[in-house]
Image (cartoon, rainbow, N blue to C red; front, side, top):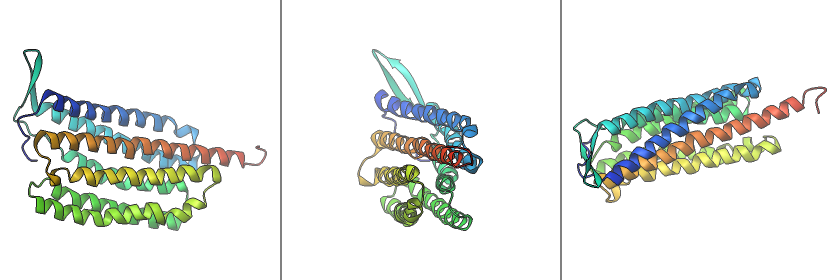
Length: 262
């Protein structure tokens, strides 16, 4: 954990404060929603929806920890008609994000594969390959994130992009045939989930290189925290809503296909 710069403005500090607070609210409310919806989907899709809720629950916990660490790292005092912000000396622990991603990113891919209800062999194969690739991606990204040396940051970024592109390619192309086999009313939702994941994930490498392209100090920290928070909410809470929508629609179709139902 690199020491924080000491010249944050109150606006910069509060922007991060509010972004982290938004992350807590979005992830927490999403968790409650997903788990309350479990009785409303058939047994085939409850595992996927349960994992969806686990992902946002883990994220809620880590956002609490990041938020508390951010608050503890600063002292905010009234100074005239405004507020003055100074570092308290307590380190800001941003490593919670990587712990979160190491746990949740593989689960995000697994929940998509499960809700698609592919053949058992294909589910196991795709889940294993994409889960491992995403875990390697996160593990390779962290050493560069905590470095100040630009050459080292770029080196680890480039390594992390190898499994990153493999996962994104698999989402956009590898699952295309399986998506086409989904029911007509579901295939559009599955495609939306795949593309949303790919687009939201593309945010992360660009936020990662903020410090590589010249930004530094409070501005870089603020942009990183806000960028990662927005990307997390889209990749987990919004993506989870699509997983629920797919599960709900496929459950409806299964109920209608039962004998005696129209």
